[in-house]
Length: 170
Image 1 (spheres, one colour):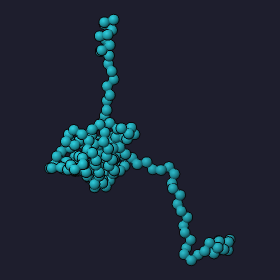
Image 2 (cartoon, rainbow, N blue to C red):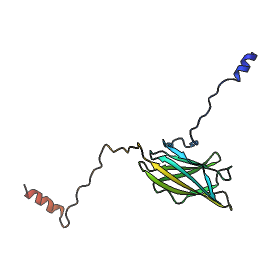
Image 3 (cartoon, rainbow, N blue to C red):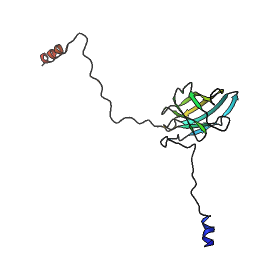
Image 4 (cartoon, rainbow, N blue to C red):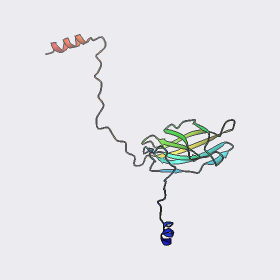
């Protein structure tokens, strides 16, 4: 009995493994390429970060904290990225800045995040520079073409006159 009690403490339990920050929504695709620099202080109330990301319809994430301990109380995006979208939320005492570039875009992108510590406290600004790569990204073409509208009748021509001319040509 004592041996089984001792061995019970040695049981291997599966460890939760998370690749990147947790996704509380459960449906967001991560980019196949996402490399993020550490968030650096570039002056009072100014932070910077850079990322390399593939435009494969997946996202790349930067995690920030207010004073290195807690998520920011509020936030906003200004200016918005020109070649993608930014989504911000708080999760597990972090403010998550998620960037998803436009599919198949390649080139630079830049956006800013205003981070508010709390009421009456100074705001921080996070500037993010993204280098977007489209290597291997394939944009599917639709199987069915959209219908093309019929050409409009010439100005000054009524439908009756057009039908009359069509009958007379036979």
